[in-house]
Length: 200
Image 1 (cartoon, one colour):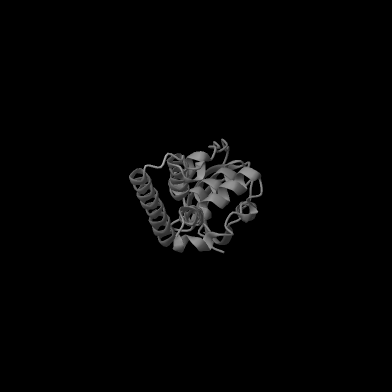
Image 2: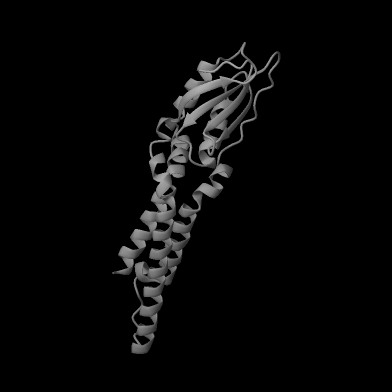
């Protein structure tokens, strides 16, 4: 297999492995966050895609080092093209690694929105949300909800599939909170008022 095909396979697998976190971030940056959870179905495949990425990069490095050794033995002075050079291979390796590790640092790429100071009584609601897969999803929802008036605290948990919100009921309703989550591309399916015990 040619080195270019191996590298393409590695980069493609790395992108696919982290697409569930890359898509929400790109959607957030582009301001079209409604598509954020459209590729969350790829999350269960992430370990397998990571193995493909590592295997492809390892094979590409093996082929490169082997071809360098053969070239040295033949004493060829011809300089390889940029796409067959070690610099290109290093650049692709760094890019693929950055994409593969994207879910581990994406949360630091989101701006931090400070929740508003809320006067008066505050209620808490726990919203069940589908489509969250990583810390990037949590940050996306937390950032968007924190910008709303009347929101005192937001804590999203991708593992539990929940978003806990402290809010001023005189300024914002649970329905508005659910609508804001829906606009980010994730899907609220139920909620429970923690202060009053109401569940829907």
